[in-house]
Every structure is written in structure tokens, then in C-alpha cells.
Length: 430
Ligand code: S3P
Image 1: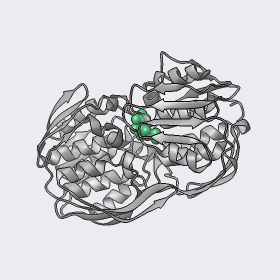
Image 2: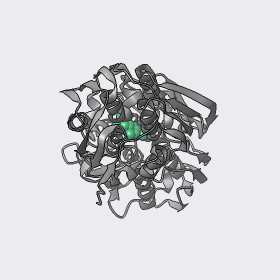
Image 3: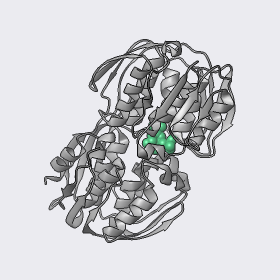
């Protein structure tokens, strides 16, 4: 895989301008999945174009689903769950945990064997969390000690009631997608409510689904309707520009058409608490999801506590919030976030090490970090660990680092945000 080292120079003026970010990765995965198991032809506009969404598209092609078009407009001919065919080769999920876990829930209910594999990062990530409930429902998993590659022996499933040990939309969604094929009702209870894109879409397409906070039940056996959707902008991608603007006093940036589902919106709360001004403009609902233009004005940020109650709503934004914390005045204490260790990289260790290179005092904890903001970052050579969100966070750090940063591997940004660096250069005027 190419790595592409890059230098990011510090800005000489505040950030100004308008931009729009690629389609939401989480919603994109689900749109492709639901279109593939729906009955009829669905059209999906504004997919992210990122490699993760492509992994899901390729997976369904391997399962025999007809898919045509491109990221601007994709056409998928669904023939229900029964239309999925036994894969003739290994399904390569690439770097995408969402692809592997949600797809597991789909193939768990199909009468064939599927082999799912991924890159070195995905092979390190825990899969027992989906194997256990899906085996309770009736599937059989073979794995490398709870990790990929996975051999999934699918078949008839029965509904279960399952309490997940961690709040994870991927685990919840895998169980719900299996539940749609199961006999009876399947109920998932989470310790904290995770993002609810699967629930929103399943219900809109005709599933009998009831959600009360962190408990969701779905009835097996519905025939799901085909649909047209335009995927809203990805809040997790917007977060890099929100933080960049928030961190540089005098900045004023508007990001158009961003999905701001409250189960994802922790980053807005945290940046506001740190002192940024964030306005939600032109709020509307699209595809059942709240969407808005987000205006961010920068300030001198201050350190805050980011406690366990924030984890599910903020899960992908800790790397960029850690950078904001490094620049803020005072201490930011992140705790209850051990899940960060099981992402595309161990984001606690990786961000601790990289922030230290940037001159920030960081104490690494098992479930978080204590970051002592230093007002300005030191220029340094830094490493993304091949993790897209780390690479983009370090690039934003570079805008406020004396002498800039040199990042070893930035090609990984294409996992979720192709075009990120062009957009950063444009808005930073570098
Ligand atoms: C996602 C859920 C989260 C998140 C990931 C996308 C999803 O993972 O980190 O980027 O689309 O369901 P977990 O379910 O592991 O928390």
C-alpha cells in the first residue's frame, strides 16, 4: 500500500470559507447494505468515495448483487436476503470494521459459508463481540482466536435478547441485521446508546423496529422496500475542519449539508465547552437524519473533561479532540474511552506518542489520556500508524505547529475522506 509522506505548513492567518465534506461513511455502508437486501432497484447518491464504502460495495458484488454507477450515483438491484449467493472467493473487507461486522450479521443468516478477511489493521481487531451473539442466534464462526479471517457458516437464525458489554453500533447493527432474518424478535441492549443509523433506515424501509434509548427490538422476516437516498455529509469528516477553525482564533468556517444525528454529535458539545462558537444553520431532515450547515468560529480554547458519558457519541473524534486539547489552555482529561484501543490503530497510544512529539505533555491511561495544553504546538515529524483519522488529525495539528509537521503516511486519509488534503490546503490558504 502506498504511504505518501506530506508536509503541512503552519497557517499565517485565520481560516475562512465554506466547504462541503464527502457523504457520511456510516450511512453510506448502511445504504449499500439495505439496498442489497431490499426488493427492487435502489439509487444512492453522494457516497463518500472512500475505500471503506468501496469495501462494502465490493463485498455485495461478491455475494452476487448487481451494482452499477459510481459514488455520485450508485444503482443497486436488491432481490431480498434470498437474492444473496454463496461467495466464490474470500470477501475482502479491507480496513473496514463496519464492513466486516455488519456483513457478518447478514451472512450469518444465509445458507452458505462466507470467508471474511481484511488488512493487517482489521485482522488485529476484536470480532468475538459479533461472533458470540451471532452464534447464539444459530450461526457458526471459525476465526483466528476471535479475529479475522472469519469463516461464517450461516443458516436459520432465531431471535435472541442480548446485552452488549460495550456500546458499539457495529455490534448492535450486526445483531439487528441478523435479527431481520431470524425467527421471532431480536432485542439488543447497550450500556450506552450508539449511533442509530441502522434503526432509522430499517424502519424507513418497512422493518418492525422499536427503539427506546439504548434498547432496540426488531421483528424477523420483513420484506424491505427499495429506496432512493442522498447521503448527508459526514460529521466525522467535518470534525477535522470544525476543530481546525475552532482552534485558530478569528477563523470563521461554514461546512454545508452535514449529518448531525445526536447519537454522533459529541464533538459539537465538546468543542463548544472548550470555547468555540458553533451554530447549526438551515436545519432540516434528509433520509430520516438531521442535517445542517455548521458554522464554526475559532477562539482560544480551554481544557475540559471528556468523561465516559461522551464515549458513544464522540467515538471517532477523540484523535482530533486530542489535538484541540494539546492546543488548549489547561488540562483535558479523557476517561472511560478504552474502546479507542480497538480502532484502526490503538488511538490512545498513538495519539499520546504523536502529541508528545508535538511538545505536549500527555499522560497515557488505560482508558484515556490526560493532556496538558500548551497553547502552541512544536513542529515535528509524526506518524499516522496508517490510521485515517490520526493522519487527518495530525494534519490539522500542523496548521498550528511552529515549523509545521511532516506526516509519514497520509494515503490512508482516502479510507474515509478522499480529497481531504486539497480541501485543507484551500481553506488554510497554504
Ligand atoms: C461505526 C461505529 C463505530 C465507529 C465506526 C463506524 C458504524 O464503531 O467507530 O467508525 O458505522 O457503525 P464501533 O461500533 O466499534 O464503536
